[in-house]
Amino acid sequence: MSYAVAQEIASRLANITVANGYKTNAGQNVALGWRSIDRAEGLPSLTVTETGYEPDTEPARLPGRGRYRIQWAIEALVPVTGNALQTLYDIEADVIRALFDPNDSLGALTKKLTYSGRQFSREQAGSDIARLVTTIVTWHNEN
Image (cartoon, rainbow, N blue to C red; front, top):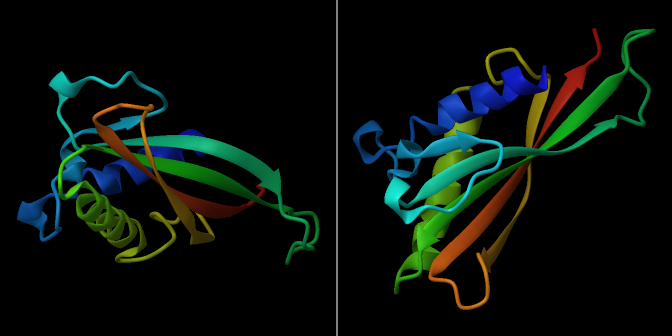
């Protein structure tokens, strides 16, 4: 299930281009899992990683069917320039739009999708790459 959800997230993120009406072209370089930072691949880039999996502590709606949630990190990298922060804000807005429109069920793979926050940083001290991690949570029923 997790891999199918990751693929759907990546597929939606790949649509983030100015030609599709978004503010950025962050969708031109999307990957799953972890990768080395390679400027030759082009920035901005987006990387989708599962960062948590836990059962829901509230009772399930149907007897015998528990619920669980998966936490996802969507890492955006951009070059540090005078407008890097604005670019990261634009990418975050694009990511949220791509994932929540037209629906938040990710093609019926989830029961619910929620935004959980963001964090800005530099990739490393002295690095010329700025980083934004947007966190989302997908909610599922056990089969």
